[in-house]
Image (cartoon, rainbow, N blue to C red; front, side, top):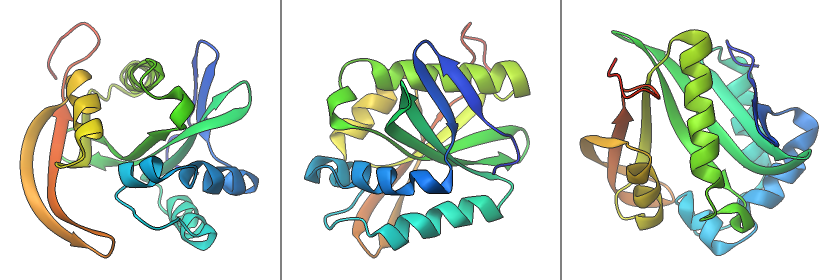
Length: 179
């Protein structure tokens, strides 16, 4: 469990810490289509052990979180990230994906906004950062639409993908106030 236990209610949607028994559902979600895998920078299927390892890593670090997005108790997405305490506390979103049937219908933006508001309201965290592959046009469109701006560009080499990675940030609250 993360440093901050998360249980966010956004209308009919709940965002909360994932429990071990839900990992098979996460595995199915991440492998539901080639598009889903591509959004996460993968060509091949996710192995269950890989997901289990990421989950256990998040449990062993007080700054990491691994959240499920639920609609009526059905897992429809995941949000994985970490807290960083630099000049100000910030949240990094490292993985955010919804099931295909909930994409491009406003769910992603609604959930993201609710999560950002929750961190602002309960923990005064208003700085959010995200890593994205620059050539992932769907991800870039989503983050730009949600007011994330380019902070810097870098190149990384990863076993499953190589290319330009951008760090995007958002540093304002729901009232448009910069922090």
